[in-house]
Length: 290
Length: 256
Image (spheres, each protein chain N blue to C red):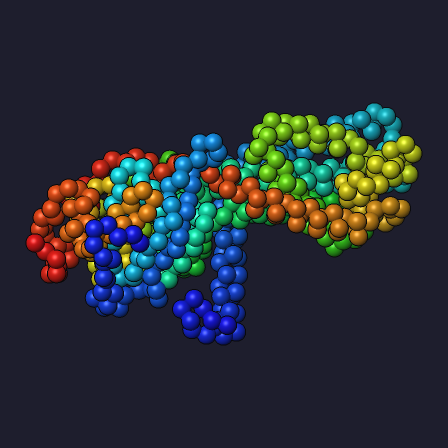
């Protein structure tokens, strides 16, 4: 193999190029994750507090519904961990997805930094949000166990894997919807409304045996419902899902990720299109004043 | 590179000692449009150029000629629609960029971020920024948005020099800020001209005539040369280049 100047290129050179590229990618991702973290929580923690508050309101509302209905358990699963486990997973999907579906602002934050691409920023947002919910979930589940309102998590490692898969899927969906929002901005509002509908119909408050027969066909292919069923299976030792499939969500996540990455590549030019100048003004430069 | 009135400029790449970088920056058949249909504008049209290492090169262009786009392509911040950019040396970010730092973060956090990105040791970079930019310790941890704009300029320019790129790329503004800081940067720049490369895109030829070894003209989406520095300058400004002090104190072979 030869390079552009005609010199032979050995395996070691190619390995070196790959290693350097991998190092650069790692540096870019690490830096952007830290920058996003810093923006989000270091100086003003309002974003995190708001997120926790909205999750808390939703959880409280759902629990209140169940308590008022006089149903403290759900098929042997205590209602508090039942609702909380479902909502944490769904909230992670919802917030990660909308954080990723922001192509314009992604590169704008690092507008003049050639080492950071929009995809780096989007990936870092997904990593940060997924980590946030994973770090949030385990202490919450631990506290519920300590206060006696929940059994211990049945399979914490499987739960971790499930949350990671949800993070990747949310990132992939964010890429797909981000591409759509670039061309149809008002679709964001439609999708936000749609997500509320998905929340109520995807198993946060019910499990497969309770699903009406007429909707089971749709539920069977609903990946969110598979996630919810698996979440209850890995959380509660007393529940084994009859339909939740790791294989199915693996396929869904892989296909969505591939599709999302392709879409991001297709619309990148539009997302990065700008006529802004590097310098804010074009004042004449005074060489004497250098 | 297109010829103007005479043949392509011959460049002596070995004029300076210990020049940084392993090769030139090469642009081959670069085409770039800005904006989206139906208002997209063809800015660069099949541009070919080689920016050799160890030279200070001035790219002259009228407003709207595509200098900013060229700078963004050279720094790798934009991708060409067609053609290839080959970097034989590490390049800085556009030094004139005022928003390289994030305003919600402190100077220290920004320096850490960029040091990590460029694989440099952050504590050394923070020390260098403090020293070059004359930034006091108590200002390092304040969010940049709460400091005077001068701090961001001093910090980002200082970091750009501290990171020791092979090639520094800038738009019209070489350095902003207060006079003492500009003097510091001037000294740094002149010291580095012996070993580093500079590419300065400007619409003002007199402003950069003493800083650059060679001039190219960006016009009609391509880079043109007119034989030598003097002829290129004249072609752009319409006036002859007059002798001025060489800022490096070196004898120029084309002084007149």
